[in-house]
Length: 284
Ligand code: SF4
Image (tube, rainbow, N blue to C red):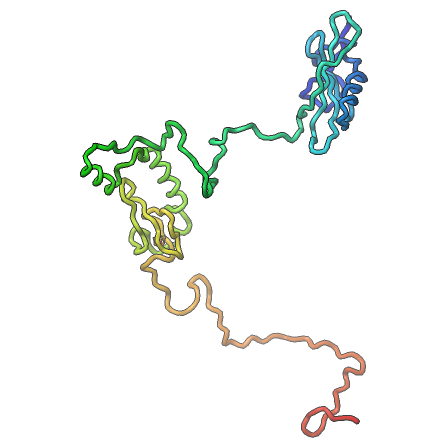
């Protein structure tokens, strides 16, 4: 029994056939059988035949354009089969598959890989993943109440604390947003370290970071000691009014402008008669 050439599924929806897989003629010719099976399915939206691909010596897949709302680029795939040496074709499977230009959803991600900073809302629970590299074991209770009470006061007493890696990551994020290289800091008159609104952190990050307590500046954000802004507590305004970045506008100066009067039209040009006081004359 001879064979015919057929397109591969990756080439759809191009020409009817090309030199790809070899398909037995009895399978390649079963376009009407495949279409009839789709008609019987009753979903509608069966477009042009795109080609046939040989699956093996006894099976081939016919593809048709799927003309269904919301399925742009998808294809109907009908698997037909015929026993060796047989001329009788049967339908094995009907399925709707995305074509090369189909709009499909991105690969599925576990929820813990989908979460992004800022996603946590009121009532949400977000446990650290097992073996979170940002955390290391903290102080273990000694059993001595005097020691354990003091431990809490000095920042110990927690089952886990941030690891060096976790602290470095946090410091880098804060540095990027509120560090000395930001545009705000470059234009600032002084640094946070010398600002009265700067509330230094305790612990290992004490030397480099603090929280800004100025509601008109980076209020509540962790800022680098070398960050700074124009609301620094030592800021003094330049003498005179207005912004030092713009020339003052002299609103006392007279500006001469030319005004074009509209042309009067018809009787409206006649000035109303007035009496000796300049008021319009009364008429009976
Ligand atoms: S007001 Fe400005 S300079 Fe002062 S701590 Fe806040 S950000 Fe830093």
